[in-house]
Image (tube, rainbow, N blue to C red; front, top):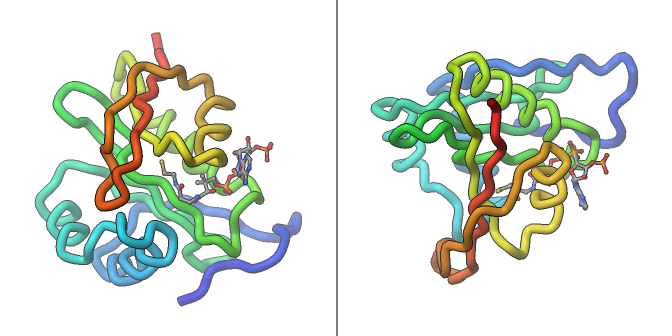
Length: 159
Ligand SMILES: CC(C)(COP(=O)(O)OP(=O)(O)OC[C@H]1O[C@@H](n2cnc3c(N)ncnc32)[C@H](O)[C@@H]1OP(=O)(O)O)[C@@H](O)C(=O)NCCC(=O)NCCS
């Protein structure tokens, strides 16, 4: 399946929905395209989808999946575990739509804070999270493997 290409127009229909088991192959393929060696494997994706407690969300443009987000409680912290927009659909506001979906759910479940980790080298994601008021909490050294890149833990207070 392909995502959108080119700029979004006023007539493009953007929708966020729960992913289904049938979408997981697509997610795994796009994980490899986007995250390379750090990509979640199809086995891990299926395991978490089937047995985990996360919410798996997809964003469609005119019916074509163009990105996904995974979020939920990790212990008692409400956490964004993954967020990605396919390269050909980036920088058109879709990341913001999924961030707002995540934050709306965090508010709905009355989480006191929203949490995430981001590679210290990921300038576009850092800019996105700062736009939403996420603040730096601490560094997790060599969190992303096999590259050994540090993660920045960020938090947004919701009340
Ligand atoms: C990070 C990511 C999800 C952003 O999604 P997106 O749809 O491209 O982002 P949006 O168009 O909604 O942009 C929202 C804001 O993010 C920031 N941003 C996004 N891309 C950026 C870039 N290339 N450079 C600088 N800032 C950027 C900007 O603040 C932007 O707001 P603006 O357009 O008003 O300036 C996307 O780049 C992506 O999937 N990257 C690869 C996967 C990834 O790194 N995921 C995050 C893991 S923690």
